[in-house]
Image (cartoon, rainbow, N blue to C red; front, top):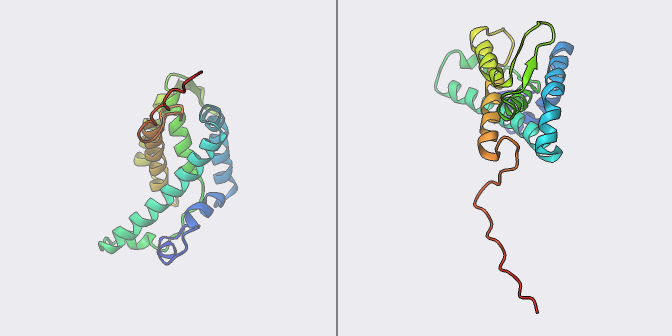
Length: 182
């Protein structure tokens, strides 16, 4: 699991290893369900290699930012931050939220139906619904920062690589000069 104090002391693998640990079966099942629901479409659109980078990179980057942010708040002397410096964070929810955000931005007009509630809406409403639930109904023992960072990283990924993951990053390469044919 990612523990900010241990991460700062040199355990730099924790942002990746935490993606493969879950606190309970319901946590794992929820992440797998959301990944099944949205991940297949994103993987087909972005390609499997870029999807893997999106998932692992989103989860790891979210963990690094979360760990460093917690340490920064503790360093600034905020009393609540001290509670979380030694609190482990685990699960792939941040990475799953990254994938869900990419899906919502790339397929904004596609209908999404909830499983247990007879409600359908356009995918673009996933982001405000998720952010509203995270901010409005914080549950104890849940890393809301990881979820919100996942949304932010998904948004950033679409801004950098485009909704279909095919935009080139950096300056375009110049075309090679034409060959002379004899």
